[in-house]
Image (cartoon, rainbow, N blue to C red):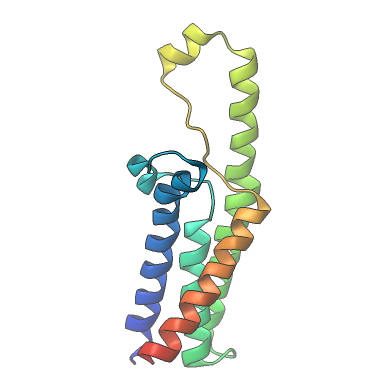
Length: 143
């Protein structure tokens, strides 16, 4: 059963590439890289979605689209993508509202609110695109 290592590699590469983009993307706007973004939740792209989707895609390519393991990976990917947009994405809206209505001294006292936690549909879609590229590369280069 050699699918697990390739699927794991695909998931790890997708996660690393997605999180690395968050570090270097400010450079394209004339700003320095932001190294703390390597641990950022939310933002472009959805690295969690990319990791789960590449895992599912490689598993489907290697084990077959009718396999139980592919079904498990696909359901996991759907849950992660839904959570990224609907649950954690809603938190982004709540944070924006809190910043508008809460007095600054309360926000400072409770600790800084993060800029992003969840994702937009576009950020998740880019995560899926990244997953497709990484999964195809891993399948054809390592498989």
